[in-house]
Length: 239
Image (cartoon, rainbow, N blue to C red; front, side, top):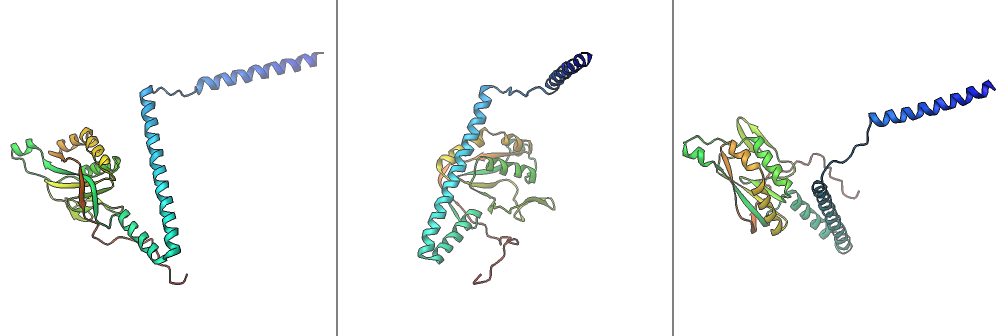
């Protein structure tokens, strides 16, 4: 009889201990709640929807390219290969760009001109911030002072001068050309840059951004230096 009582008492203690442990764990690790308001959630949803749309567009474009390549390969393998090579040259910036976009002029600030302050070159950090801001707004092509930006372009300080593709950038004024996929994208780029705080960063360095109106046809030269292809290997013929 006593043994049965002990067993029941032990079971009750185990249950109580388990419940206390669960309650303690809940108090120590409360469920994280999303405290964002409706507007913040809607903005996040809009960004995710836009990203999803972009991914679908890229998938559709790749499917069209594959289909086109398959058709051309059956008719003429050489033509298919040349078409693929030309498209790759366009994608990485080796070909001239003609299309919608806008022009930005980096100028000395009016205050620095008024007081006769010497004009200094733009710093690499500030130029990188501007390029990142432009790319954030979905630029297709960027050219800085006649130097085309591609995947391997570097912006750095060399002997006190800011360089792009190992060539020095002139002191202000100089121009930055931005190519976009459509005229609508160019208008969005204009509005976003006008509303961006990047202009304040330039003002601190006694510079200002003069953002030109979007245009339908902007010409940007292709990258005119050799492209580093150290990770590409040529396959011998017949393999």
